[in-house]
Length: 196
Ligand code: GRF
Image 1: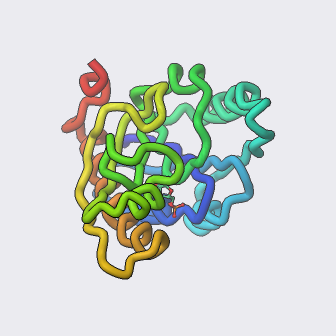
Image 2: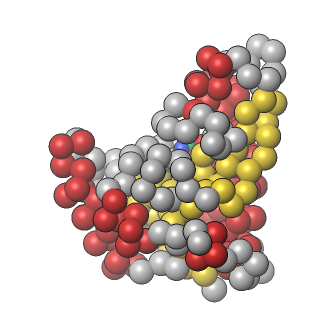
C-alpha cells in the first residue's frame, strides 16, 4: 500500500478527489497526512476523511528556507512513500526537493512546458490559445520543469473566463493525478526512471 502525503494551499478539490479514490478498497494507495502553508479550506477534506493534517504557516519569502525545513521535518514524521503537491502555491526550497524528489509530484493546470508558474490558467487566457491542458509532473528544482508523467489537452471555449476554464481543467487534473498515483502504487510507473 503506497502511503501518500498531500500538500495544499487552497480549496483542495484535487485532494478531495484523491481521498475519495483512496477510500475504495481496491485503490493501492492511501493518504496518510495533509499539509498546508496556511489554514487552507482544503484541510476540511482531511478532517472529513479522518486524515491527520499539519500547517506550516508561510512566513514570507525571506524565511523560505526555514519554512521549508519545518515542512520537511513534518514530512519526515510521516515518512510517506510519495508526496503530492496539489494546489501548493509555494516554491519548495531546493533542500526539500532534493530530499523527496523524484518521490514528489505536482499537478499543474496547463499542458507543460506551456504556461509554467503560478498563473497558468490566466496566462493561457491572455495568450488566446484554443486549447491548454493539465499535467502531472515530477517536482524538480525548477518551476514546473520536471519530467512529465501524464498530461491531457483541455479546450478553451468561447466565453471562458479564468475561473470557468480552471474549473474545467481541474477534473482532468484529478483524473490524471489519481491514475498516476495508482500507476506508481502498482509499479507501472517508475519515478526513478523518469528522472534518469
Ligand atoms: C489546481 O489547479 C492546481 O494544479 C493548481 O492550483 C489548483 C488547486 O486547486 N496549482 P484545488 O486547491 O485542488 O482546488
